[in-house]
Image 1 (cartoon, one colour):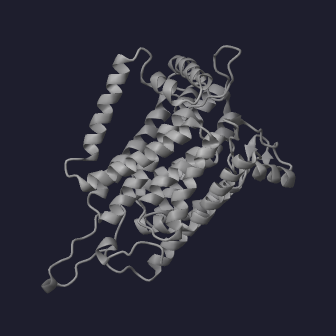
Image 2: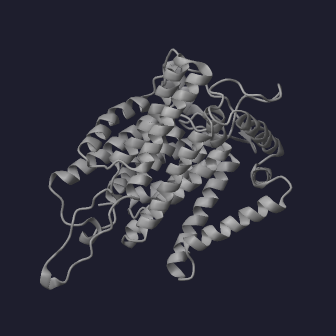
Image 3: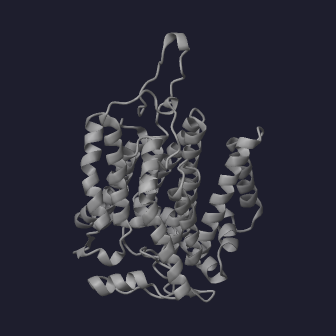
Length: 440
């Protein structure tokens, strides 16, 4: 078996015979949906202005599992669940007020699938560390193949995966070849090199700290390094940040005076000092030194400047999908998911999403301290992945696969952060006193 051995006190008493089978089906279904989202965009036909993607079809199948889990009270409705639903309601209202009922309906359906359903599928299908380990094992071959394709495309100088998909389906258009440092910026099955690097990089903490063993672990650890071949500064930052946080967690286990609380305190102080002492502010300072070239850095600063002006002019409802005010020579692309979401739908959606993010990270951290070391590492790995992904979203807009995976990770984080601590073994004279794990 590829997973780390689980002692009885890690999972409670032996569950009913149907429980492991149901748990495995949830992990297998999420793995199936993940594989559907790995299909290139050339497999996404359009119906009017709506994309019919295989991944969205998979999410609709997962909706039945989600409804059943909540109806049977196998998963309890929590505050972050309400925040996600609140996001969809507010998105509908903002689109209705800025663009009309037709755009509100079509836009809300897309966000209902890519945001809400992705979150609730992750939330309902992954309920325990064992579920998540099984999911990671199931997707390891696909992750490894995707990483190999990304690497091969850059070395060969040809985005052959999407070229073959376009030749097969005729949908969309063939990918554009973009080179940097003499290498192709690989796409693999993803719509943009930065998205490829962001998604692949998010897998490194998950596999490195999962507790699984054997070939799934090593495939999962090696594949994220294919993000290097997207030749994106955000991909490099994602990888180095993940490695640094993994090493820091290992040091906290070795050195008693080190803790995550200390790390967050020092990080907050550094951010405050940079914000106060730098002439341009924290965001512009980071963009100036994190980008590979000055042109990209300057463009992101301009997007931030003009985008924040749009937000301040339309703070409550945003501008919907309408064009935003900027110089004529600037592209309409907004390479910042947090800024884009706020520009389109206002501050309320931003605050609701930040609430879900913070809830997930805080609960993962608190719950991890009460679990055995193997599960503790897994939960911290999920928290690192979510945090690095969220920071990476400052340099790219998330859509389709990237948006699905971000919100599925948030749902998984909320579920794993809400599991009950294992019961302590009772004295031998009183017999075993073990209980099933549950979601709070």
